[in-house]
Image (cartoon, rainbow, N blue to C red; front, side):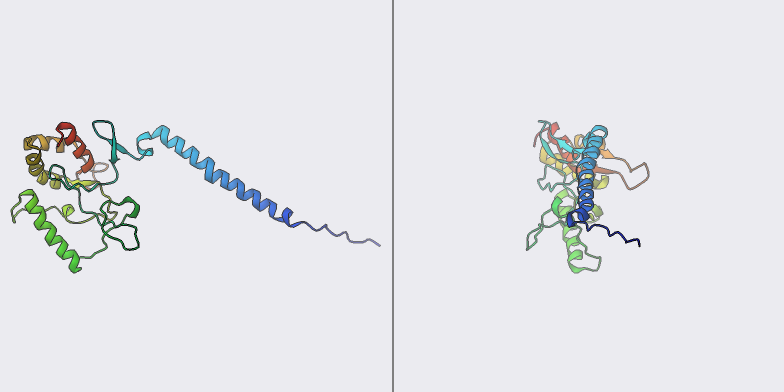
Length: 212
């Protein structure tokens, strides 16, 4: 009479060993090999972008990224569009262009605070740049972008600030307008969006022309 052979009991380690080895292999591939390969390819093909699109001043010092705005407030510099980013503290407070906490204002056109901010911002912009009440203030001079980090302003916004910047630096307005033209970016792919100016690039060009 034939007897049925029983399979030997497998130890706990022999049961979990394949799962452990697979996890370690996946960690190695996705956590080490893949990042090294993609980083190496990116640095070889797009070194500028892979390193953060960093911009340097005339002295060769890194002063920021082309992709993240900065909060210039002095009259001798072009000013960026408003930023609604906040600190990451337990009690958040305004911190313009805080890349660690990208956000928009999330305020709608019926929000009283938003309406007041637009009115106050319009008055301040007109006074700062010597505009009359009849002159239109560009919308990007009054509202924050969705990320709060937008590094660009519209061409109209830049041109309206040219006179103030020229007066503060004691240089001809034509010189400032020429720098604006040289730093104007066209529409993306030739048809998306509007012409724009990178504020940090423009201010670097100003300092290279004549230090403030």
